[in-house]
Amino acid sequence: MVQVVNPTAYPDLNLVLGELVASVRTILAENFCGAYLQGSFALGDADRHSDVDFLIVSNDDVSDEQLRELQAMHERIYGLDVPWAQHLEGSYLPKDLLRLVDRSRRPFLFLDNGERELIWDNHCNSAWVRWIMREHGIVLEGPQPETLVEAVSAAELRREALAAVREYAEWAPEATKAGPMSRWKQPYLVLTFCRLLHTLSEGRVASKREAAEWALRTLDPRWAALIQRALDERPDPWGRVHQRADPELVARTLAFADYALRNAPLV
Image (tube, rainbow, N blue to C red; front, side, top):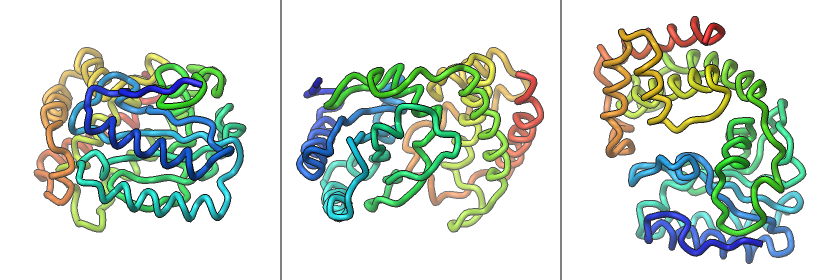
């Protein structure tokens, strides 16, 4: 079993991750299999503004008592005086259900970014997450990722990306509880469509920056200014969650969503 002391370049984040792993290991005891970073940290494109995508792998289902203790633990960690502690995002997956892509996408225990309570959600039950985990996952503690996840084919990634393009295109114009499209959602949509189109073209998962740079080289040049602006908007994304996006940018983003939907099968 591998145990990594300093898995990231950020000492304050490493302390939070150390607390998370130690607490989970104590709570799950013999049910603990491993803990991993995936997402932008695994893909090598994380910065101070990234959320912290994790996976906790258990040997079996989490019991009701373990779930109660995990809920209390996440409440406690959220209260730490470290910004990273409020931006953890990840799921608890039994190892037998992690191994192969699950097209039914059943829900697992999930902690959303900015939240302090585990809910049931299928967010991490995807080919996308399994590919990142196997190919680039960072071990916090546990066996190597390739021993837990079977290889994910390019065809499986493309199938999922095509479905996701449709889902995001449907979500794009929806108002949220906070009102019209926010300054967080607008660039997030642009970069997400870039990532999905990149996966459809290349058959792998790229970081937001790599996918956006690919899109700048590859897609219709009329979208270049919109994509570049989304990249430039990277600093302090969470401060823009409750700020209204510029109506002109919203219109362009919705047009880009329509472009992605129409062109996804052709990429």
